Image (cartoon, rainbow, N blue to C red; front, side, top):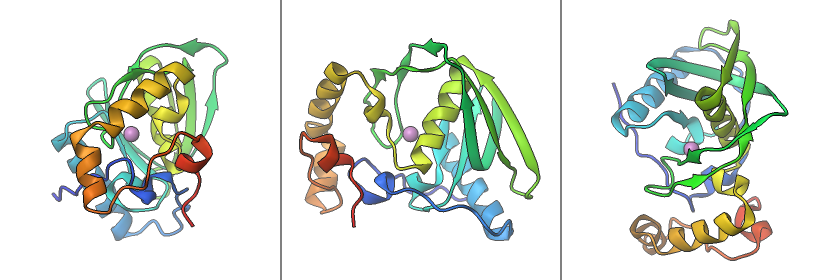
Length: 186
Ligand code: NI
């Protein structure tokens, strides 16, 4: 088992869209294992490859005592929405009410390249949406209501982890325009 360092908000890998997995090889199986080990160690309910610095479309989850992983996912969402608190291992201690679809159907592949479909509601649906967003460089703070987002940004700017990353030159500068904050880093 191999626990990897989790990247915090500010690291450009988190806001860059990840690439499709092409080779379903041993390296991919090691990646799924590393993601699983790192998620369990954190502990967290889900983890996407960009969060450990790997820009590939892979994520894992641990919801209702069931581990899962999905590669190259596509999502179909219900119109019905749910409310609930959400957080992210890349934003330590930051939690906000995050609107999400109530149900999600995710299609993709397992690590052996076999097509799989995962259907979830409530928390599993939330996790599938949160993790698939990570693969598109979208973070949960992008999904908050405007007022909550302002509060979240303030809390992030004041957080120890964000300031430490900034001092180490690992955080992008945070400004108030979403276009500047969440735009691609070229
Ligand atoms: Ni996350």
